[in-house]
Image (cartoon, rainbow, N blue to C red):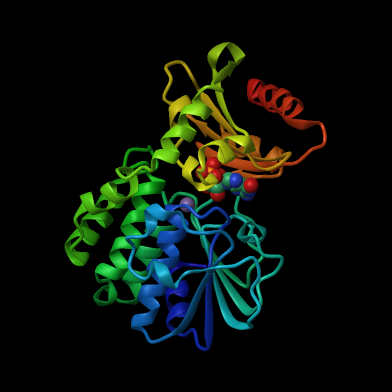
Length: 319
Ligand code: 5GP
Ligand code: MN
């Protein structure tokens, strides 16, 4: 669908609206969900935000973040579901979405939406920025601080603070619009997100970095989180956000991999590339997806982590 059609669809949405996004929500998921929640409230819509997993504490400064419900099930029936930043509906974590109609707004290259309506633009650096451009078509006057702050936050996190090559001149113009229109202080976002680490997180980082290892003559750097690290430090798995930046930052490394044991024997694998390897394509081969330079998948094969490493590194070596 074109953006204009989506804008019209949203303007005409009636009844009970559900907003949801992916498991382990990141800044783009939370920012776009809250941005739309706060925006649609101004249009007097009946909306609920339900996410499968908890919202990490460092997003607690966002307006109305307390209205987000974290739940493993959705019991109520909805007329509409707005599904944000998910390449496929199963990424929400829910078996099914109980809504008569659904609209996916997303920017993944591997997107395969099974919704009634969809706008998927892989050239957009974030779902938040795509959402903002749709909101601007509906009404710029509705974009105040409450809408601007979560949207800006998701733009910051998905672009690496406007540093990744996905960032466009238009991204910076959109950011400027949010600063002006929403009256945001950029440091509010940076300070809340990156400058209030809990000691548990730093202790966890210490343990995870001890696992640092290399493959393919230093082209791959990988780190591992074992379940026991969480017990030993008291940290939550959401506190690993950003850890993958350390192996990625090493000179000569082209691909960074983070293996996270989220349940005993079950692994969440994150991949980051500096550009020479398309990690979305590699993740797809393992049942996941994502973007060219940031992707992931889940693995719970009986053969265990060592076998997974062997297969994954082989796949990266051939790419
Ligand atoms: P992260 O490593 O931060 O969890 O995710 C990086 C990117 O890869 C995100 O855009 C995310 O949507 C995508 N991704 C991560 N895990 C999965 C997965 O299991 N399946 C799919 N389809 N995409 C994933
Ligand atoms: Mn995103």
